[in-house]
Length: 331
Ligand code: 13P
Ligand code: SF4
Image: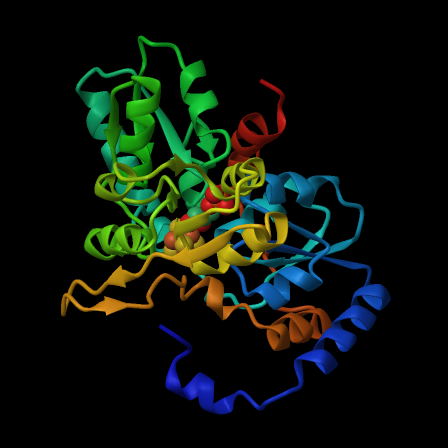
């Protein structure tokens, strides 16, 4: 899925090299640092001052010293950066870069579910994946990322029940690795949900000796045939640790191949195709349409215009405490 037709037509072509020069000059002039998630286009990752997974970028947002951050990722990432570093201006290239997981869990529905469970006399702790809105985070006890989820869940006293939101697949995987039962929210990521098991098995057969690396947001049938399961940073560290040149079948957002190639160029990386539910046809839908909204032109424009930016909202105060306790405090 690309940009809506109207948006595509209004995009005037500009030479990427000119855009990069302009961005570099504007960054220096306006005291800006660019943070980019591993799922944005490689050319944006290459001009970023910091790249990383959700956990590292949230921490970078706090530690860097510039007055302005441009967060190339999706809305909840920019929001988390603002909450953790309120004194900085946080710009995001496109306000419409959302996340299907974050969308699947709205604050009023979460509040209703918590009230329902508490009315049954159940002592629940709510653990949210960072892929949630700040309004949802403000209702939670812990925030986890793919990088620290296991460690945080293992810290929660065993006599407390865990309500895990919003990713059912990550939740199921965490139940398996921690041995903790959890009540799962029925959300999922539109990209990881649709990998085709059939095509993956075919690719494995066609590439003898290949290994499958998967993000834990993938459904169980994909994880079951995976040789390595981990978030984006763990994936990077894993391929780096493998010395023997290997063909990796990559079951996550396909822009991830860029940082994998950079850190471990001795390997071959093949994206796992998706399958469209409506037609059953194989598709190249392993790109996140939200991450794809980040373009060099929009990066340039947001630095130049100082907009769009994440504005401070009343419930950010509550979300701040939870985010800091979960992501910044040593365990
Ligand atoms: P990571 O924290 O593993 O980078 O994942 C972010 C994300 O949005 C996965 O879909
Ligand atoms: Fe959200 Fe999935 Fe895109 Fe990650 S890849 S930002 S979970 S929609």
